Length: 464
Image (cartoon, rainbow, N blue to C red; front, side, top):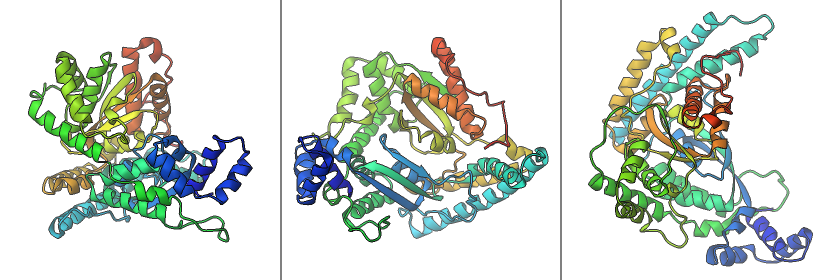
């Protein structure tokens, strides 16, 4: 059934004594669009829209756009993997914000990064082959695939947010509406255009159908008419950014750890720190301690700025959500791209400013590719400084460090630490997952002992 008709049938099923068969027959002869107009959009019975699901695919979008698409908490999907495919000839997305002159500069830098990616990948693979002879019981094809994946793990540090990818998602109509509204309010033109295109596709007949002889109906035409841009989120962010610039004291300075675990006890201070985190470049602990030390009136001022433009239709800002534990991480954006897919936590990021430098995997030096890698990274960072902000973010390599906040309960901390530290994982997020376990050991030794994480020095490069 089309998603909107499915939602109507299941909603009626919950509100009548009829069987589901009778409810479906009812929907065949009644207008589902009129029902949704009244009960979902007019009366606000939002759970109705959870009963109809769409399958949607995005092709040839940037990695930056893919990560933003996946931002919905109630989202299921898969993106193209950088571990099992060669991206050296993939080309890249040029951000539409760039002028022709800036676009030419961006494209030259992108081509240089992909050329370095191909060279580093080749040398890393050769180094691994010399270091790890094929076991007699292992088939040659499996051996090459395993080592190729490890080489791609290293080479991917030279990929960047502009590299194209594909995403397939399954989402409810309700989640899809939130996604459209959020994307339409994005700072990136590519994402604003994607928000419009999603709405247009909901009003059109589906591109791909399993039953080629069955009836053809639009997926969600009612949604397409009502999914406007999320002005509340964009205005809240702009207001908080201006407030932070005008009111926060000078940064505390010092060096923050790569993974810092904070267990906030003061809820209002936690909320204020979380609201300010994405619009500053400060560690979460610094913001939290600052909010705790200030008056209730000071904290209320921040909260009022965050909620000033909220309407009855808007959910309260994401900064009001959280978990028992807040992990503040300075990690490479490639690792974030992988950890970001964990749905059972609240995630907040600071701007992709490129101000925290980049990581260099040990295998790059071992393979004799350090000069190639460093020259490509330094050139990309220098070029970014010449480009306008929105376009410059597309050129940020996956090896660049940035700051991210993950808030979760213990069950999710245990799951991420256990799963992502395994020997089959990428070495970057393996180290992060291990540090998450270590920080939990320090903060909550009674619980940290329950996390069976694998230390990063335990390796098995021939496993996938």
